[in-house]
Amino acid sequence: MDQENQNTSIDNQQATTDALASAPAQSDKSYVGMIMLSYLVGMFGVDRFLLGRKVTGVLKLLTFGGLLVWWVIDWGLITYGKLRGKDGLELQGYAANQKFFKKLFWILLALEILATAAVIAFHALVPEAGQV
Image (cartoon, rainbow, N blue to C red; front, side, top):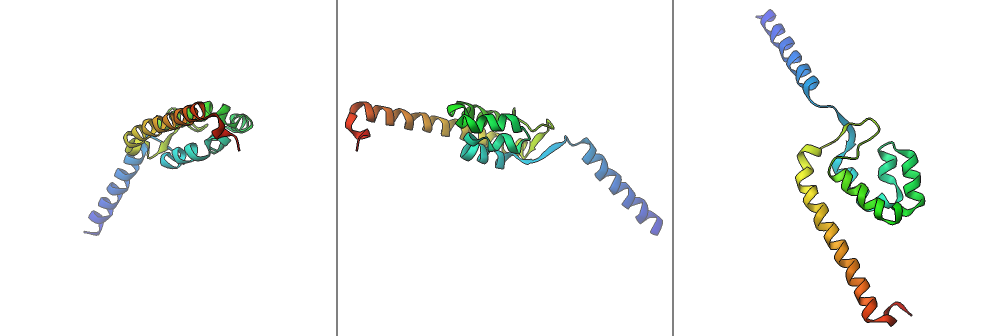
């Protein structure tokens, strides 16, 4: 009986090891966390620094996210799983959360474009609104 329990334990350990070996390797960085950081402080290059891309992080910091264009591009690349760390591994939680965050990306991007257009239109219609 004791030998049978030992064999079962060894089989369970082997099954666990096999499952871990067959699972795709993932980064130690969180997908959800990286999206949030990219959206909130990505214009300062924080997302690039955390992914191990220090040179482009400094460039992004010095150019204020490439005048916000680079910021939006990186935010989208992280959302779609195309921007990874130096190790090239998929961010943790990408598979489970990608659908929601892809939809959220387009909704937030559309809202930002509309808000920018509204501010530009307001200043065009009311020129003295920008002056104090």
